[in-house]
Amino acid sequence: MAHRNGSSWPHRWFVSDEPHRFGSGWISGTIGAVLGLAAAGTAVCLAWPEMATMAALRAHWPDWVRPAALAAAAVAFGLGVVSGCLRRRKTLAVIALGSALATFALSALPPREAGTDPAPRGLAIDAFVLNLLAYSAVFVPLERLWPRRADQPTFRPEWWTDFAWFVASAVFVQLTTFLTLAPGQMLAAVTPLALASLPFVLQLALVVVVADVLQYWIHRTCHRVPLLWRFHEVHHSATTMDWLAGSRLHVVDALLTRGLVYAAIALLGFDLRVVAAYLVLVAAQATFVHANVGWRLGWLEPFAVTPRFHHWHHAESPIDVNFAIHLPWLDRLFGTWHLPHATWPERYGLADGRPGPRGFWRQLLLLRR
Image (cartoon, rainbow, N blue to C red; front, side, top):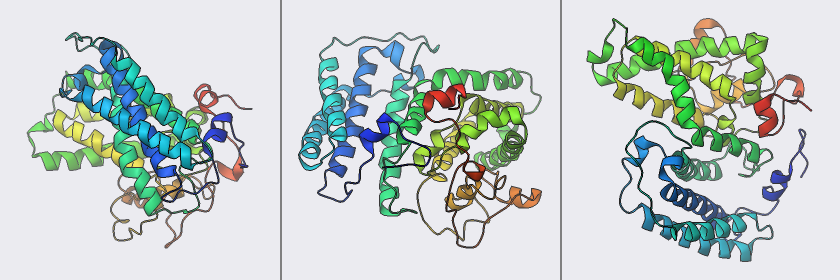
């Protein structure tokens, strides 16, 4: 399968012209692969809790985590066998079977108790497991049932690159969170403001407005300043839009935006519970607006950023439009709004079809061919 920006060996493992319908082995293989990876990740967390988990999540693990991981591995193994029998390309079956067997092997290790020190020590594989289960359960069915482009496969070209960004953003979340929050925590210690006394809903509405005004101008600046654009163009190099494409975000780009936004929120003295609610909201919306979902949300478009609105931001042409993350009226106010009636972009990526860096490592290191 050709692609105008090339392909890689992981792409050849996943991309196939085989059908996705029930009885083709795709559904069983995909569910089996997701469950198997989640089970194997959970087994790693149980085997090496201090090196592989976040203390904040670890404190809330239920007692049934281990049997649940084993049950998921057993289901994954069975689904992997079914997919392997039905599908010509065995990649999903191999992932399901291999991760299930890895789970059984790791579960044979003696359990280890984690310390109580809340300081970050390593990876956050438990965060990856939760993200994998939640996003796959929501967005894969949405994109298969109500696709914007019905001919676009789930495992499309460059899927592997975006999945690598998805994994990296989850497992290194302890480091990136520390770097993001550090400036804001220093400001919070000296701020004379205290908006935390306001009602929760009002605080959340104010956080959305404050965050999006800042994000709008930071985002627009990243398009204008060449040094910042080098990092931000990684995100715009995606030529296919789906929920996973939103994960393609260079760490410098992410830290710049999130660090400045959180610093402002901290300076204003919002309740930490409100900030946590906003973080959940922005993560869910950022994923949704990249999704390959063709819902007609015309009634919502004047008030909130929708997939169609944000897809135009990623279009090859026009460029430098629709910078808002939550509130499209900011683009109307500042003259960057673009939303032709009932139409979607035909092509995505950098202007004039220019290829950006291809592959996770080239994008991380900003290397071009």
